[in-house]
Image (cartoon, rainbow, N blue to C red; front, side, top):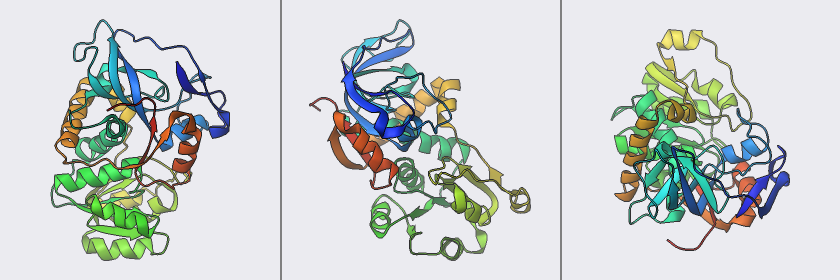
Length: 328
């Protein structure tokens, strides 16, 4: 089968469009004929050797895909060949076929095409886990999201808005600020031209932030750690700035706030039944048009390196999708 192969942890320069052996599903896995795969910053980071796990080389990158089930392992009970599904794995999506654990697969509603379906699993499950499971976000609370125009950030904006929270979105351009407002942000801060500290203080007031979802790390984290409210929840998810921040522990002590880690992949591995139920709920919301995954552009599979560079350079607004096969 045709696939993108990463031969060294050197980012896009080590990617090759070539023929590779077809994968086979284990007892708890599903084999999917991939029609579309979406690109994430995690894909770029892993191919560059900067992610916390490193697959054995060579490997096929890609976390998220959508397509048609071809075969199921002996212990799979929720799916059968012919089902239209969205699926995820640590890697393997940038190929004509991939395998995924049953708990990381969800049926696609009839009105959701493969392009949109390929953008859902990792991003929206991360947002679900962060906001619903870890932060226990409540309607009426104020939640700030950094990197809000990215895949996980935008999913957090949408789910927080759906819950009934007031969302403050932090982005890096005026165009992104306008876009996040259409996805549920009540306020948008363009850190490229606005003072983040002063704008958050003005918008959150003396009460401070109830929840902060930080996808960026670095200087943003240091600023926001001082703007949390009493009993708030500060959630580090990622470090797209390239800097893993540290925290003076007197800050959560004085405000009685919690620092809550969010590692969705480990949660899915440890609690597959919970993850499967969350995937079904998220996909139902997409089918009911309560969530609106944004596709920035669609490129052919062989341009995966270009797509990953666009994501790494923060050029995209929403997801870039690789078209693997034609069809809906």
